Length: 263
Image (cartoon, rainbow, N blue to C red; front, side):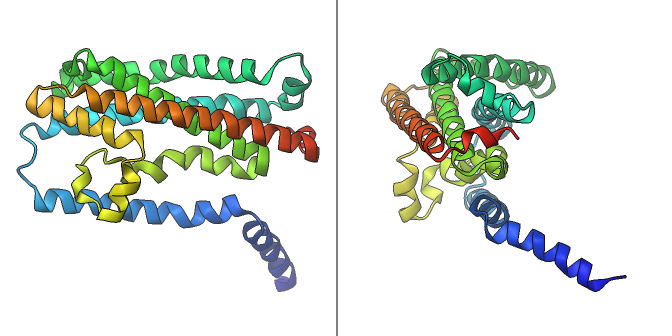
């Protein structure tokens, strides 16, 4: 066994890690996010064991809505990544197709992928657990709209990272939603967060969406202010995501890195 060769191969992968911000971030934030998320969940149920009068219904509804957000974002990312994996990326950008047309196509197609993956799960939850997201009524449409806009925004930001950093940013595409999960207050009210994190969380549409979801299921009252606030915040982030995508595209075009993306 030649230890010099082992050392050389190990050093090569070490250089890949320390010289790639996405790889370093991927290694650090997975355990950090898990600790934050499950720490807050455990703290909430320890201090408020009687908070929910329908624990299964509220938790499963939150999980379904969160999965809708996750699928919307991942579907957008996957279609972009498939262009890279199939070595069609360069052809996509030299074809007479405008950037806004690419964004529109990915945005509208992502909803089909999202529904294909989610509808069976929603239908299974009804007979198995007696839980249906339709119990949210008409507000469900607006909640899903806000979630979809924010999911597409995350997809835009991840694909912008792919344009900026290349395929090494791919891991972030799979994990972007988990980073926001602790701040999204998906399974617990915002009061369980430290005050400093509450301020940050209120700037996200997720808090308003899931707070209102719990409000509807627990009190059967609807606060449309929360709903439209979430849509407004999602729209702001969506516009921001488009701007970042354009900036990343033109930056990659100027550096000449687009042509190497699909290789």
